[in-house]
Image (tube, one colour):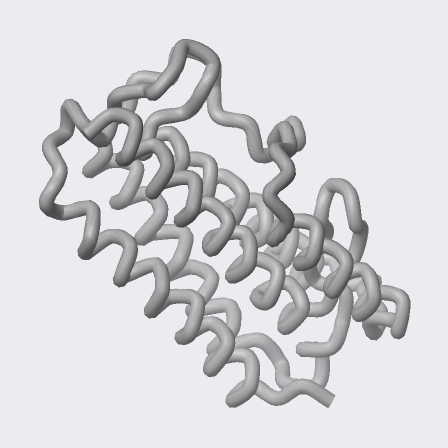
Length: 178
């Protein structure tokens, strides 16, 4: 059974990596961070915004499930799906973001605004993780668009891998535009 301590340790690891990324990005200009390497690709700002959108989806789903109930313990199959999902996002294969995690066409947002919104989502996630009943940490309170339902701890492990994937993307974008 997963514990709150385990959940918060996984979250803190993910948050530390995010803070390291944001610290590295402080030295770049707004122009660099909003520049796309190609017409059909994302800028660093759009990548940050995508991460915010994806994590907001996780927060909203968890909040809704906690309000309405009806969630069950995650199965062994969920653990397998989480491992496969992490493997899939660690491979150097380009995937199109699922519709729920797409960024709006023609989005015009500053890097600072994208980071501020991501900060708000992370604060919301932390609050949920700190207050969720420890007896339901193993319940299916996360739903991935492709893999389906996972436990809270499994969702943090996936979100961490998702951020790591996009850190690589940010590095490639910066190499192309800086």
